[in-house]
Image 1 (cartoon, protein in one colour):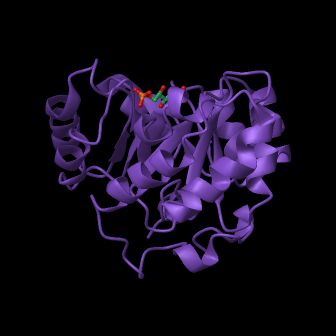
Image 2: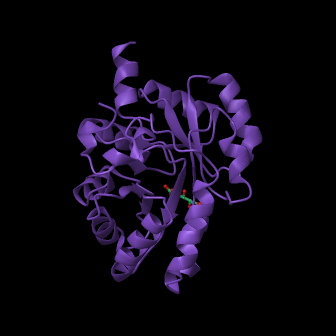
Length: 237
Ligand SMILES: O=C(O)C(=O)C[C@H](O)[C@H](O)COP(=O)(O)O
């Protein structure tokens, strides 16, 4: 294994997920709701959250969620190097972007934080490969051709794994997850804004249970759930 491959494996954003293959994408502007959200995710058996940097409260929400060492919390909608720094300081254990910024990727690599940049085209996959990555988000998945597009990209790039996100539902997720090039999917359906706003935590937990029923968590996966509280530097090591 080359040094480049070894490094990219160490920084794999999916290794940090502890074998989980659905990433709840959270948009929350009420920091006070973070503890209840943590409990709902844990009760639903899906101890993972991507907190999007789309609200002024994002860093504070991320910090509150990351207080729980039994949750793996990352940051989404990370657009700039400054966002990366803010997210990591708040406890983000992985970074997700809607697009591919070499500056964002390089900052994450420098900090030793797994990064999942968004791609929508073959050219962007090639840029990700040039940056030493082997796992990318496919975004916005449904708007860009869905599973048909994933299959076409995977045929050209068999060394790449994809995390389709954007427009995916509990109904469409299984067909994505069944494709060998799909490492995981992201989505907001189990943490929908209306559920969070109205405090329907039982429904959030129930949707998490339904999401986890779509895949089997392999105990042999790198960064397995028992390591969920480990430091970023330990991911995949
Ligand atoms: O900006 C980012 O980095 C993101 O992560 C965007 C989210 O992945 C999508 O907004 C989730 O899409 P829905 O499941 O359709 O709500």
